[in-house]
Length: 141
Image (cartoon, rainbow, N blue to C red):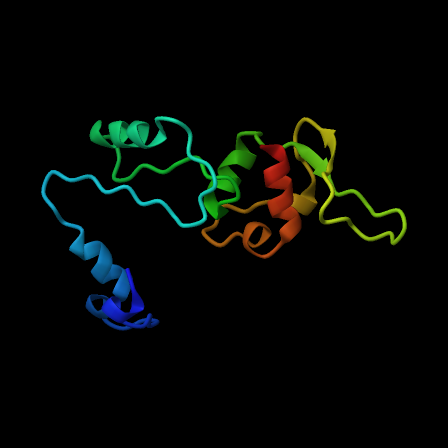
């Protein structure tokens, strides 16, 4: 994938000229299953890709996704199922500011704080715009 080959990204317009649409459209080999892995993946469990392909081949769904931590939609599902623990940021004693690089303190087995409510939306503001929501999700896992 390169900008030189696929062109510069454009908002709106005809999908046939959209570089990502063109890329996905070109992936059309018969009897082939494509597995997309983003460039920011830091861990893949042993046999994970084989498990994803096996689930897809069962024919129950259009696509199969990994269990992604700090994903806008999956974070709300994790929250709904009680996977997020109650954590609270530690304050730096000298400055009184929240210490972004220190581990958070666990305050409860379940996050019920309205400060960390993740709405079920593709661009949940808690996940996409707030470092503290991302930290809570990561601390929970």
